[in-house]
Each structure stands twice: as structure tokens, then as C-alpha cells.
Image (cartoon, rainbow, N blue to C red; front, side, top):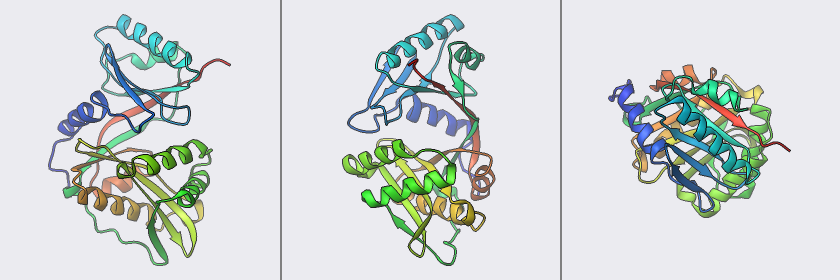
Length: 265
């Protein structure tokens, strides 16, 4: 079922509520608007970076880029400049490269209104979905993440545990179990005071892929979001998840590229 709101309108709402008016993720996060930049500063295991910018000229962009590098490196922090395809100036990506940022793979920002989604996916036979509420569950999420994505999940583990401890109403994490063995995990970040809930980290271990578990976890989280009054879901989709999400009713809104800056040792 298609969204009832045009993609351009959803993107405008996303830019305003999630980017320009960004809120702290937790008690140790600081969100600041500095000139034409909105940035988040967190502990080293948190997410640090620029979530929104809007420059009138290339010169203004270059100065702001240099200022953000100085801000984060003075604290010994790596950070991300999350660039969206419609951000200005049009050559902002090239300017970030010139300042020493490294681009990561593009992702498609997708959105859907919860009441327009096809929430008919069922949990596959032999699988049960359980909420993550404690440290043991977080450890299982981290283990699934490492097997599914092949990268270190220690920072994810600390962030998720911090959130569950301090602001549990802003996250919903779930595990898919085959018997007692975790085979898939995902989380949803709920942004109070906005229309949006974000889907993150959906991953299934290789031997359990292709059985509909990812789709079932998307549906499970969408139902939670709707029950809590969140009108719109957003997700940064890779090439494997994008067609699944489109079949569920998600619409591509734009392309986003993470540009990462690592401080010199």
C-alpha cells in the first residue's frame, strides 16, 4: 500500500524534525546549532557528527567543515558528516573529500507512514521474536550484528545498553530466536516530540537469510511504532534491504552518504 503523503513532503518533514531540529540521543549527548550546521557531540562510543547543514556558498561550507574538524579533533573524536543528495552546495561531497573525509557506501533514505504499510508479514515457522531489555539481550544483539555485518559491535553494545538503562522508552530492540539461538536482531529508535521512528541494525546471520525473518522484524517494529503514536518510519537502506522495504510500502526519499573523519594519531 503506498504512502498517503508525497515523498517530497515526507523528506521535508524529515529534514525539519530529524535533522534541523535534532534532539539528543541520551543524557551524555549534546546537540548544537552552530551557524548553518547542526551537530551532535557524544562520548567516543556514541554517534558523533553533523546531521544537518545548509550553506549559501562554497566558501561558507569550507569554513564550517574546518570548524567541525577542529571541534571534534580537539576532543579526540572521530565523526561523521551525514550528507544527503539534496544538501547544498551541490559539490559538498567533493569539499568533504578535500578536507580529508572518507566516504562510506551510499544508502537510500526510505520512509513510510505506519498506517500505509502492508503489515501482513508473519514470523517464519520455528522462529520467535523477543524484546531486548537487559544486558544479556544486548550481548546477543551485538553477537548477531558481528555475524551479520562482519564488523565490531562493541560501540553498538555500549550505546544500546546506555539507552536501555537511561531512556528505555526511546528504543525498541528485538531478537529473532531459532529455539534459543539468536539468528537475527534489529532495533528501532523513537524520537519523542516528532512523527518519526527509525529502523536500524536489521541483520540476519548468513545461514538464516532468505526465510522472511528481516521482513517479519520490520513488521514487528512498525506495529510497535504505530501503537506508540509514531506516524512515519525511516530507514537508511542498503541494496539488500531496499527491495524488501519497497514491497512493504516504503518509498525512496533521497540518497545519503556517510563521510567519516578520523583524527590523526
